[in-house]
Length: 304
Image (cartoon, rainbow, N blue to C red):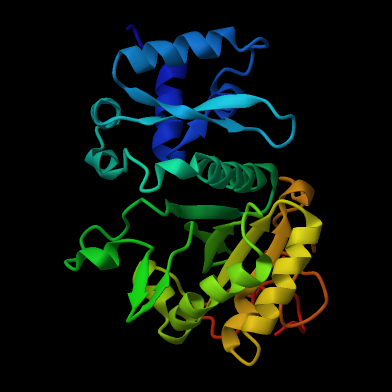
């Protein structure tokens, strides 16, 4: 197969997002392909050349009900990119999902990641996502203790397993956001009961500093992305109840994916909180630059 520039872009996006549907790849790499025929042909070529793997299960787009196959890189694909960009760190990317039965969930995380990157590109503010790490992706590879290389963190019998995490840098602050991609598959009280103990321990032990030593913020945020406003509010109430009296209650942010857009997700008040009733933005434009933040300085004034 003679690789074209758009093929390299597709492979690069798979290394960045881990798993993408053909629809997502078409929207990012093959923007002029109105029928999808070119996308299918190029992805078939990449698969036959051994650079990508196509999963047997297909993912349904909740917006229109259409089915799409899911793709991810193979080891050969990683080696191609590492050679092309002369970057051996690409070889450390994952090639197999730890939970292959949850393809819908993986691609939903990718969709949120796409939303965040689009939001950063759309704003004139000097803000950036410095790092994005998915559940199966290693971070801090120089860490001698293998379990400490991943987002999955054990505290005795308690486990904290975020779906992803990222560093959001704005006005010299490097804040850590952990992502929970909700698909409304479990009762909201059950989700709060499962997730809260791990995040309480992560908060108490400043676990975000282990994951991201570059942070200069003394706390972290937990971003729950729900499929609807109703589900968002249910989760907010459930986590408020489960974390009543614990400081981690201030870390939770709940947003409805169908209301979030690249134009509003960063600076508009579309996020619900556990510890008060007002909606807040992800980032406060008036945040004060600092080298060490011990309070919730990215929140709107008065919301502490």
